[in-house]
Image 1 (spheres, rainbow, N blue to C red):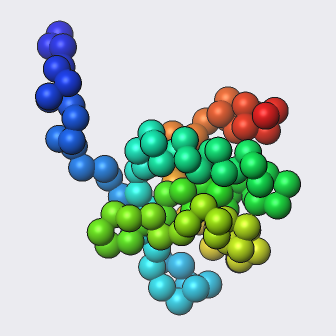
Image 2 (image 1 turned 120 degrees about the vertical axis):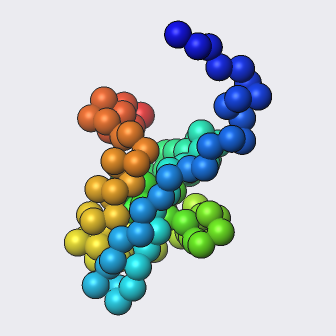
Length: 113
């Protein structure tokens, strides 16, 4: 077993992403793997607005990125995204879930909080 150093880890690995065709919106959306910082920021916003924001839309907003890897949606746009096509959101959520490791246990913890 080889133990990694901080220098071998930090900033050395590109975050994977996947482009998904969304016919409902007549285009393609890129879903990426997010950093711990971004995840924390979006979870904080979700808990503040969970009465008006669907979890699936929240997770899509947190993971959708542009060509440069920047967030496509701002946290304050999650509520508006919640009002978009459920089939489009479901497709994107499935990829976001797979790339970022949301588990049933995580979903249960989010719902309890």
